[in-house]
Image 1 (tube, rainbow, N blue to C red):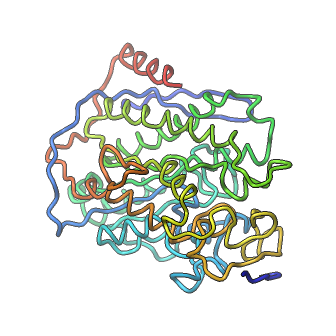
Image 2: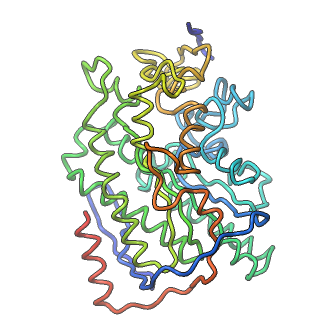
Image 3: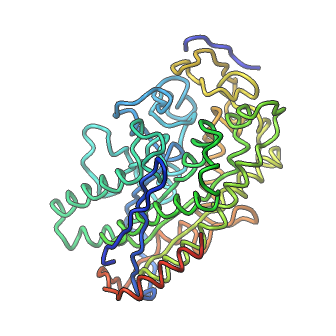
Length: 410
């Protein structure tokens, strides 16, 4: 049953130019080994800084000049938990909201919300539609580089308010949590089918991960040491993607899934290389592809009745991104119980799905969707007893050798 609704380093960088793209890639090298660590006492809170896209956006896009395709500040978004739209692209809470609960933090607010000035528990910079590349939905979203610039502004304010030493300790103990890359792969696939005639898939994944690396390094230079990442879900199984392929009868689009798998193979290599180069860099990576795929394959086991059709939208599988009636297509249908569904709209999971994944990210206790080498709980409890905030200078030969290692990955 459904309701039908109408109108409802020594910092060295190189610029690599591709046709239509200007991408910054890092050939920075930081030489060092991991420092000693100990676990924090529970009374000390650890701040959470969030970066990324609509999977993590708590409402930043409410406060930018953009199109409604990049906003979710209207009914029925938010109806399950908050009872009103907050700007989250779901019926309720997102993964960072649950991580805040588990870490005993208040809900981390959107950075762009007027009146948000207390950053001691962290803040959320994520923007729906954003990618690692500046060009992804450019002009409609807050791209990852701009999110990094916002973080730098926050650091200045923390230093002004707390003093250099206390701010330094907060920044070094904080967790930096990322969900980014999906829009970089979805955008060219859904809007320009000839895009991958210009680049091989491996080259394009290398560009995406190169830009992510630059932002990681920017946070590291300021003092951040603990990072959490999600890999790509089966992007080809999104209801919005299934209807793009002519003649598709509902099966997942393997071309896009293969791109997600390539990203997921390369991301751990990049993180391991960064760990070898950045002293004290610690990370947690959740295998979102496997955990999400397990729900798709065994929905009843996880309490879902429907994993192929979205709760809110229109068209086949409700794959048209029309939820709420405020976008280009005004007609949409809304299910009676979002918790029965894996997808709330044609691109985004329900709160119930996000909660299950958040539990896996936090505890890492599962045979599916591994979270390695640390779970996120461990990152919150881990306190570095020796932290090197400096960046060691490197010779040109060292930089060249490390750049060749990065090139060999891609």
